[in-house]
Length: 197
Image (spheres, helix red, strand yellow):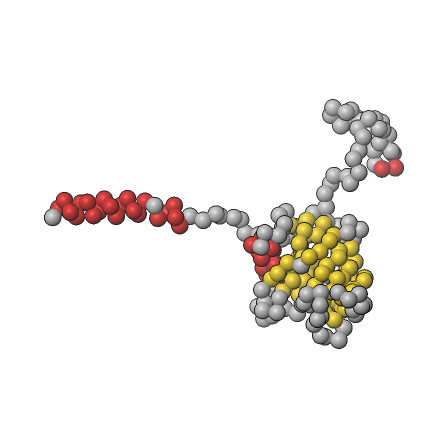
């Protein structure tokens, strides 16, 4: 009897060794946004799929009881990450509601160009709250001029997830060409090896 109990205990211990390995999941840090603001971008062009102009209004988001601007932005960021949308290095969120002027919903996709109030940073993802309260990503293009073009199937609360603007210049710099004094340089050529005057 002692041998049988010993064998059973050994089998249980061996099987128990694999439990922590099976329970372990990929641990990822909680998403965090340092700057959440209510945005009121100006509506530029807004056209439905048939090419007809659509009248839209942008307003401050209507928050449910217990919701904060920060919790809305964090939920949108988490949904973006879960959906595999490029939301790495997001540092800011611009939150707003968008609706048709008559309060109805579109019958087809509507493409809207919005002029952002804060044109710094690059939009990394556009998330909107679906009718059932879940977050979904919208197709968009950051036009690089402070505007973003978004295609909506449904109007509601929108969160623009923004990456910090890159410090690198958009145009390649020739290290052998002297810096221009009006661009903050010293006017002296920089060393091609170190980049210093």
